[in-house]
Length: 123
Image 1 (cartoon, rainbow, N blue to C red):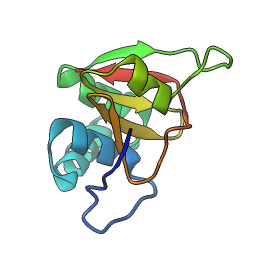
Image 2 (cartoon, rainbow, N blue to C red; image 1 turned 90 degrees about the horizontal axis):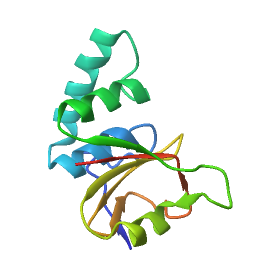
Image 3 (spheres, helix red, strand yellow; image 1 turned 120 degrees about the horizontal axis):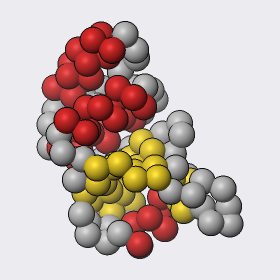
Image 4 (cartoon, rainbow, N blue to C red; image 1 turned 180 degrees about the vertical axis):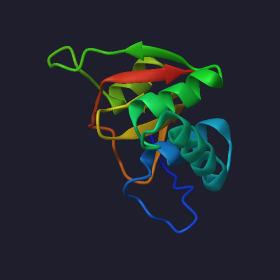
């Protein structure tokens, strides 16, 4: 089930999905996640929303990475993922979007349920 949620303090919905998803999953403020990712990105000489940067951030906080088949018919949408994994906290990556899943609901500023998941992180 989709739950409308946008921790961006100015209500923006574009370009910060990684920050929003992590903020929701870790119960941190948008600014705290943004600052943490920017500091790590500077160390890595990369962008804060690069998969390698936010992946390292999640790994350092105890999340475990998993791959999903991203070619249909074996592909898994965000909505299907919530049915398959009804318990726990996850961050799903679709290739160009990130969304938080908590106990069978996905939290996002828009209904991203039809996006195809490529990988996920589980805490």
